Amino acid sequence: MADDSVRAGASAQQQDGSASNEKTVSSNGEVAAGNQTLSKRQRKKLLKQQKWEEERELRKQKRKERKQQRRLQRQNHQEEEGGDNPGARKRPRREVTPSSLRLVVDCSFDNLMLMKDVRKLHKQIQRCYAENRRAAHPVQFYLTSLGGQLKQSMDEKDKGWVNWKDINIKTEHYSEVVAIEDLVYLTSDSPNVLEELDQKKAYIIGGLVDHNHHKGITFERAKELGINHAQLPLSSFVKMNSRKVLAVNHVFEIILAYVEKGSWQEAFFTVLPQRKGAVAVDKDSATAPEKEEEDSDSDSDLDTPEQTEQNLTLSPNGQLQKSPNV
Image (cartoon, rainbow, N blue to C red; front, side, top):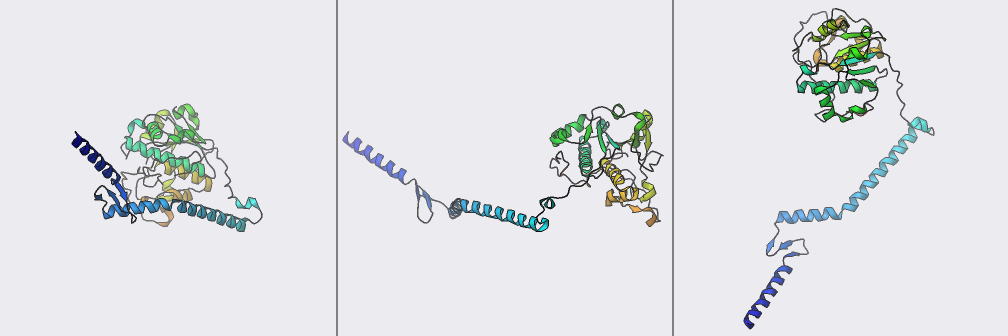
């Protein structure tokens, strides 16, 4: 019985000794767990972490100093630029004169597109909205027949669209929103050439990205509904290496540019992407055969956005950050 007590006491002392040695830190930073010591890499990592924690406050102080220094530099720069006039320090606001012209993007082709093409159309509409918000003479922008896949894409990728300003978003067809006699459908298949814009009219852009699978559909729709139709005077000013099928945002931006500059030629060459090989009619007498552009609805000319798909979300003020049959 006595022997058992002695053995129990010795066992308890041994356990206490093991517990005290379970974790020790030496003066040179070595950590030991029992009889096992950390590897060289682990010791270096531990020392690095300790140093990082020790210098936390120092880094915070340095950041604060840099921030104060930048603020002082900005103040000094503003004083040099503006003198004693505080109003001169503000960036001058661009003068905006809204146009009475109406531009309608017809979104009634939703069932003719795959989801990947609907997303391209969504990006093009975002670009239209952003450009209109930045324009010197913004037009009256309408989205009609919004629903289906397009609305789903907008809800998923850009929830802020519900807060967009200076835009009329309708679930109704454009014929229910604007008087039929005021409508002009812009389509490259129309025999009528648009010489100038009528501020009292509403010009429709077909919201369709179809890779030429539904050629002439916008022209047929216009004829069925008895709507006036016309094509942009592209051939009068520009020779292109591809078909005269432009993306929704290109047509929209050309109209905006024309409203601002009053010149179709300037508008075309301001907007048309280089990949379309556009040259002025009077500068090149050679006629290059038009070739089919299978993927004229690509969104390679968009700034996205993004875009990435980076949710390409637009703020209500239009700050950021493809081809319909028109």
